[in-house]
Image 1: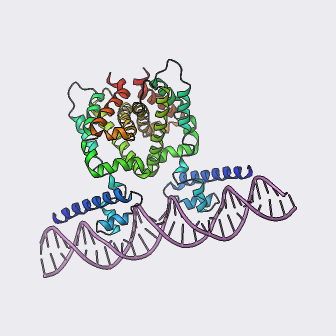
Image 2: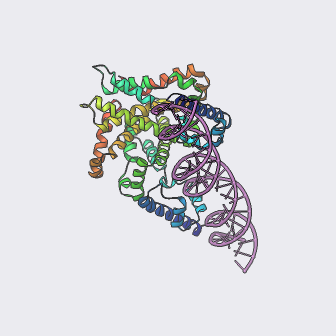
Length: 199
Length: 199
DNA sequence: TGCGAAATTGCAATGACTGCCGATATGCAG
DNA sequence: CTGCATATCGGCAGTCATTGCAATTTCGCA
């Protein structure tokens, strides 16, 4: 079961590449699924056996971040409290360099901020991720957190980061400054918002 | 310009009522816009001159909460810091009785948690609201907050409350207890979520 | 080589949404 | 009261995502 499998992977990649290209040039909404399928040399119907929808195309391996965060929680050090672990988890799972280099990732960041449908889907994925992370965090600290507190804590941290990030990415100067500046300003902003927790 | 105006308002309400009814019985996804239009005695095409989409139907006056929060910021007391004002704003703008009694509001709460499309739209509205509130907060505290920090702070607080709320609403016991219990537990959850900042 | 499962794909249908346009209804001036 | 300008209404046709169905092709393996 290898030729088949490899072919599927190649086709899948072809679809992503074709779509990335079309989205970048024509724009997301002006690109039809039929266009993408044609560019990837497959039937329109076949597209939907690779991706459940046009939006899913932009969020492959959506659970990678969750996995990273869960891993950070699992490998916590003896003395670390919930908030500390979570901060570390977010650093590890957060915007990596990849997000600022990989073409699809860059495109995604832009589309999330401009295309309603994409934004909605992205937010859904985010809250699902929060839920999952909260579950693990609570399991890791059964004495200190109940389910509601865990959800609140995770919501606060991720909320702070995404809120700051969204505004930050709208600032042309900040974006022009490159990844380093962005990371620094993001850290500053979240420090202010999360001060109550770090104390 | 009165007869016309009144008629529009009446028709709008008729649409909402018809939709509420159909959604409640048949379910959101099994109710077509054509069904709603027919039940409200208007042409399908006309529906879209009242609501931009099927989802908008569920979020009339989406900016009421924002207005309440902005108002809380505007009426801040001399000694209050940003976080305190925001905590007060969230308490005032938070889920009112209406959300637990009004049929459409109750339905909305349920659909947000079960229908992907509705959830996506609801989340979008929420982040837009956060943006707006952050802007006002920053204007109110120009010395202590920059735009990014304000967004982070608002994101953290709202994130905490919504995270807690989502978990709470998933508890069958809490929901079964009726509006009173729900309201009490909601207040508790909000307190827990916001405690770190109220101090 | 040839069979059975998996993958591909065309076709038709559903449903949201839009642009276009004629038919109606309403507000207001004369 | 009449008639025009305008706001609404609502039908029609078309686009696009998405799905069920069924025929066909392609593979993996015996």
